[in-house]
Length: 93
Length: 483
Image (cartoon, rainbow over all chains, first blue to last red; front, side, top):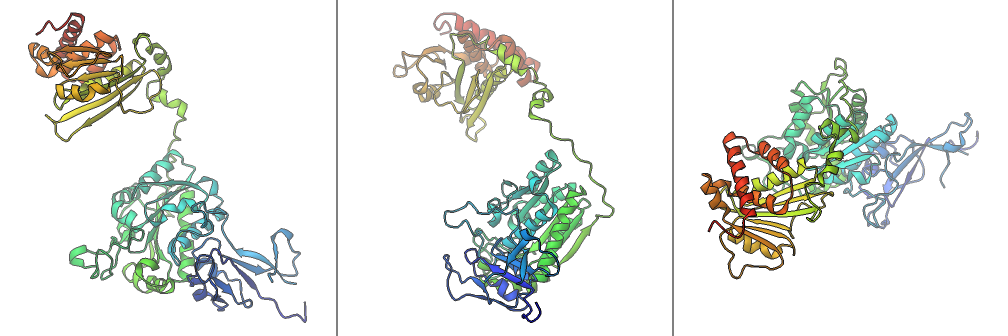
């Protein structure tokens, strides 16, 4: 791992079909890594999107979001621990 | 390669899809930025964390959150406006192991449901109330709520809420905290992420208090309504934090968790099979078997009786006597009165059904027995009588144009006969006597038992005894000797 850039502590996945573009997550995100996309989703909202880097996994966007499943926040698994395969999610492209 | 694990995701107790509209199974019905969705997530997260999904019952109110049952996969009951605390009381008492959450908005809880919430809190009922205060009626389009701030514009306070006209915003937490019953009352807000995290802890605390059996807990949540407030979601969130909290200060208004005693669990509701015994009708089945006897086989087992006349003629009482006697005979019965607001002289009728089988509807539109206490009633209902049915008419003769060959009609001046007994008002019972005698339905014993329950005075019981006898006599005799 040494030599590679340090991976982000967190990762956020946004379901653009569920998002209504209220912007509360964009406002609340401490590292400011969320924005409203330029495109419209099928319901006519500009959905929230991740800039792709810098998420800390704090979960604040999840709590301020009014939709039950629009935001999922992941945290980096410490590499020294043996990974528990079922819980693991590969880093999203 | 870095690996990630889910830290915050959709709670398990949300449905995967919301079966509300064809294309919208992915989203809630709430407006962008609405506080309801946030609070639903706080509740869902708590239910998951406490592992109580299988025994949680959510009582949803009237208001925007009326559809909460589309989202949360728990027991759901949607109740009449403002009555959630009453229903929650019933659910919690009859199923003490359940976790009951009454989810109510400010119109529901603080306006129409004020009485219910005050008394449930005062009784210290062991359930949890989540009270969403957005200071407005959202679903109906923005009318003033009891919690609307002073000066706040709404469709019903277009110049702003004015103390001299609409009074002060109702402070529910402060009001309920003045009672002895509640165990835990806190006001939180959704004004920023810190406030939301505080709200999460309050919701969890309130529900935990219920799981510990300590008693009534309520969390008031100041919540944004961007659409009706005419703000964008971020402005609305700021308004909660900056403006609402000035009128509705945040904090814990009551915490008796340390000294509160565990409420004694109410006795479990008895199983359904036990209820006849508790009501003292345990041998109903055997009585029902015997019941067929008073109705001889030649007569219809399903009596559909219409009693009609003027108010004051004893129309409703006559129907009640029939129904009560049928009940004693072990029959299925129904009695449905229909009358105008007048106590006397208005038209009045009632529908009575006596049946050996369960009754599908208490309405009698095709009677097989018509008891017409006056001519207008006869004219109105004679055409509806089923062929082969019975008609009893309180008069001296049928009008020329008021006759049918396919029904049995008995015409007697029942009221005049009662008058001769010294009590004009007993005409209905004279008619009853004629009905019993002619049709052979219901035994004397059951009718007398019903009269004893419905008629309180000894004098009237005696009059009714004479009236029944006179009616039977009149039915036995040939045509109209009384003329």
